[in-house]
Length: 401
Image (tube, rainbow, N blue to C red; front, side):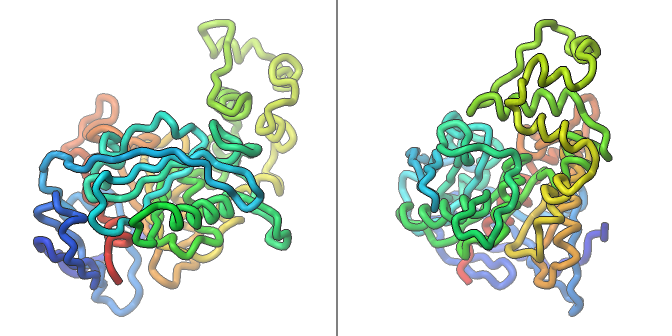
């Protein structure tokens, strides 16, 4: 990947602030921020320079500094069922600031892992820095999972666009955004999407035929090719325990379920399993679709190619901040491959990537100042959330163009 390219200048302002030509003077939205530091993203070279950004390089630059005041925003929660174009309704949790003094953007995340127990945004470390600025936060159970209606399909294939009745994760996202814009009071008409792992993948799907209101996304640890390098296979080598247990967890019931092993030592259990045909014969009985796909497609065939990210993607449609962890055992391959696929067609300078010293999703939790017994000199997780993630969405969603 290309190294960090020279930026223009840092603008240090109070109340009025500028980001690459974006000027605001709406103190109520960001009233708990006394000083804002952003990078001016104007590149002096007339040729389009790309920024492949690593977290350690970005630590040298102060993009964003919060005032350090206590969080003063209180969020009110409501739960709704949002109808899709085919009549299926998806369970959705909406958090909005109790006192909205100006129209706010929407930050949206879609997951198969359940949204009803998620904490208030200002109490969730992953997004607390953005919550201090003031957004409408929306979390949705994807089709067929938890409280949502319909049938779940692991990494649902992209629809046949010739069929007007066909649906996929892109259409579900589009329909949800359309409903949110009409039903969330005091929104500014701008939406951002983000998420880690499967939610990173649904974020990528949102960029296929995106809703016009979708102005920026940040896919984080998305899988891109489940045979070549993500999750279930690494260069075709099948990860047996992971594939078995994850497929069961997501498809045995509508909610996450853990397979009941009859002995403590699961390594020994897998050794005693015998041929993989015993999985369906003794345990799954053909009822776990993803496991059936493993059995039907042991080699890299059209199934895996059509499921992969490069097959689905065209040119970038919205600004995208990809995020990857060097020590992500599940999905380090994914965000790099997604970035690479979009980079070759990025004519509008919308494709960016951050890579840091994290395991799977490690940037979204804790200080990030260590990995096991390895200690770093800096709190890389905190700095990603404060100095990269929060400014990324503030630039694209809170600005007036």
